[in-house]
Length: 158
Image (tube, rainbow, N blue to C red; front, side, top):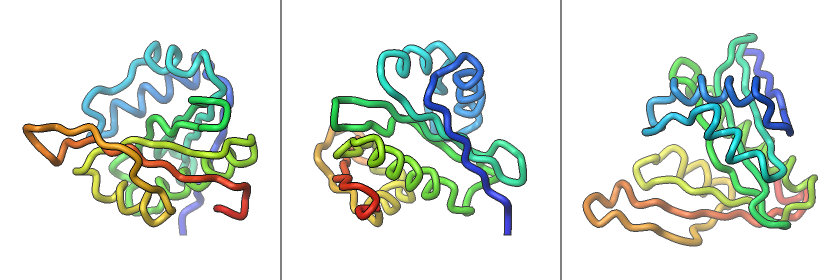
């Protein structure tokens, strides 16, 4: 069994944004890795949550989210480095984010993903996320962007 630790940051500090930028460049599925400036700008104006997962003390993944409206928290970006997959890190970070958002008083957690991210879709559906919208890619349906949302009602919903 591996020792897994999730560290939480609620401020988009320069160090946190730099770490996330470095990690995003190592996640193959992210077509366009985010720069430190991209991350700082996205998170600066809203309450945010930055999660960093560690396995045996090594940085293994991340998850970012921010307040979209007074009662909605948006799970913006996340990834697990290839060497640390199949350990349940994505699910652990999502559960952490859901619990944190509910504790902060958010009523909904929303996320977007693409059709071809099967593992992500399966995880979201298994956590009671519902499809609320679709952005079609008429050239390749695997690139359709799905909008999903989960109602949060305190710790009981988790």
